[in-house]
View 1 (cartoon, rainbow, N blue to C red):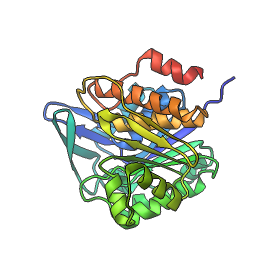
View 2: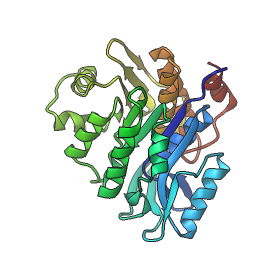
View 3: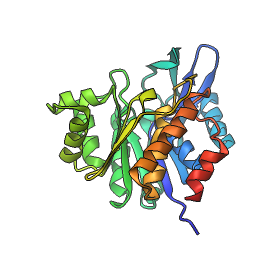
View 4: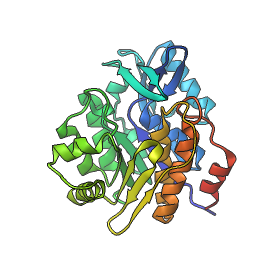
Length: 297
């Protein structure tokens, strides 16, 4: 019987508000939903307001077959929202401040969950407030050292700093970073060289097991201490790239947990994220052939 991996994404859960509609979003929540589709026992960890938008988010998770057990509720802060504008399928964001996911608690049941995990994902945005930053870091300290601790750097607006990035890299053993974000890291730590040289320098500096470097339609690079795979991307016409990186991150996670060769993991992540780019919304239902590929191997 194949092992079912325990996975969690901790951080923001919110509504992406487009000019004509809204959709559930938040990188760690999107990551969890995609890992769930790909066969993991996956849960999102966040906080919503005791308001209609919060209740609607919980219902949306349930409709996707996801547990809301670790979605905490607060009456003191509203459910998070982000105004999203698409320009040639690429999003820009206006993120509301001091909302429920800025106040994720750390009760005993969350500590217990952390100890059961095979992989956990976190980012920079959800650490913009002291309360959630503290809870995320406590959570990661209770995740087993054998697990994947994936830092999806996810730089948004002005909600990051060198201190948050550096401390997060020290807590992680996997980095997921985009072509727009790598120059920020290089600048922070005075690193120079080609893309591959920068990635290896970051990996060595922070003793990371893997780095997944994404560059949109041009594919991705996946590297470890002794191997590197460069995939040029899949054919597809982008409709909405919101959540594409989160789906790639989930596919990277599942392939690495299963011990696939790096080239196979990298191909799979591109197949999944290309499909998501061709759909509306961050968490569309994945096609059976991709689900089967993940579950059967």
